[in-house]
Image (cartoon, rainbow, N blue to C red; front, side):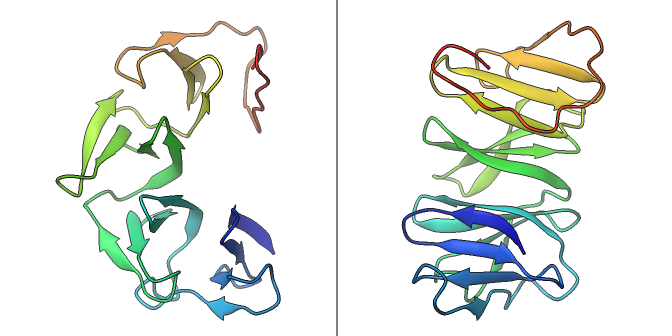
Length: 170
């Protein structure tokens, strides 16, 4: 299994058939998440934001669950979601059409930056307040959550698998 999300309340993994399974008791008992997700939806990741679970999918956008993953409903019109992350109490989505920010008040996704440019992945360093975005073949840096970006020149940069942050470094 692949871990999709874990915090003090949830443990959510992808089983051998790519279906999310949820445990609320540290893995002792499991329920198959998915009513509303369907059997063919490929879940890329799940985040917990504003008392709701958000599932980013490869070709069906974002789904939300307010009942611990038992049922899911489509959230907005996004199609391809490469990644979802909570950054400074806001929810962002890396999509095939740029970086999107979730507006809680309107329950809609809004352009946050890099419109019409696919964002493959992104990382936020809470210590430096810098967002790093991967838009192949570029590695970009933003100090204003994607509104403006600059290309980081990295000799030999081809693909980033994982970024980890410490207080002072990327």
